[in-house]
Image (cartoon, helix red, strand yellow):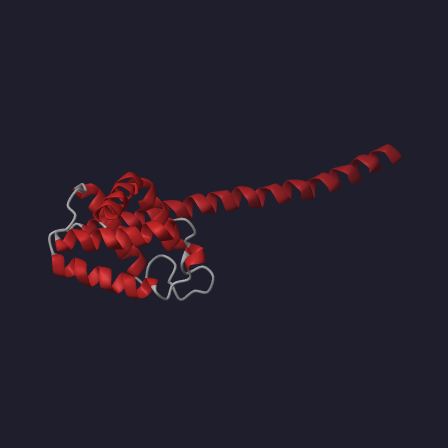
Length: 163
C-alpha cells in the first residue's frame, strides 16, 4: 500500500508541471493571432495608401502629421526601426516634392501605409494605452522595414550623395 501512495503523490507532482506548459502554448497562439490581426490591419492601411500616391497635398499633410506625432513619441519602443521611420518620412517628403522618384510604386505604398498606421490614434491598440499603445505601431513599422529595407537604404545613400 505504501508503494501505491508514493505513485499517487508522484502523479500529483507531475500534474502541475503539465499545467505550466499549457499557458505557453496559449501565449504562443495568442501572439500568432495578434500578428495575424496586425498584418490584416496593415493590409487595410495599404489599401488606403494607394489614394495618397498621386496627391502631393495629401502626402504633405500626412508627413506633417507624422512628423508632429513622432516628435512626442518615445523612441525606445521602436529600437532600430526609428531611423528607418525617419527615413520613410524623408522619402515621402522628397517624393511629393519631386526630388526623388527612384522608388517603386509598391515600396511607396508600403511606406505610406506604415506612416498612416502610425499616425492613426485608433489603430489595433490605441496609442493612449500605457506601455502597450505603441507596440502595434512598432510591429507595423518593423514589418514595413522588412519589406522595404533595400529601397530605404538606397534612398539614404541618395540623400548622402546629394548633400
